[in-house]
Length: 168
Image (cartoon, rainbow, N blue to C red; front, side, top):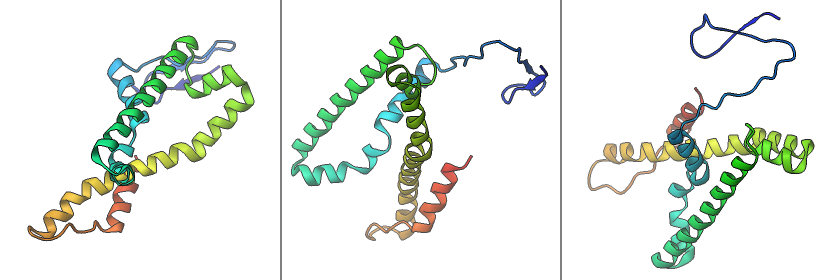
């Protein structure tokens, strides 16, 4: 077969694909990168968006702290489950590999497509909008001047920053 250029590293590097050779992903995440990825996907931007609602529906700050503690325990159990899956099924592909091993090809394929079309884009959009609102709020407060009530951040500015966050 012919040489295929690699996208990362030096453009002069090439990879010779041989017929019949197994192609495997090389694990390149370190401990810090892996922990950051997992914590970011478990916690997400919800911690920055939902505290007001939790306090409002819980009725008191003490009860809301208990709710946060219990959800932290549930998230820790979920993280430990993923740790167990990762050591039991040592294949690259995360959720896809785990669902494929447990339920077969069709379930894994459907989960992957729903994740790619619905879950990941929505999660990224919520994170980008949250980042845009939180990063623009100090600027809007500064521009409004001291002694003024908290101004609303212009919606078009939030959309612009969120769009910039989603694009590379």
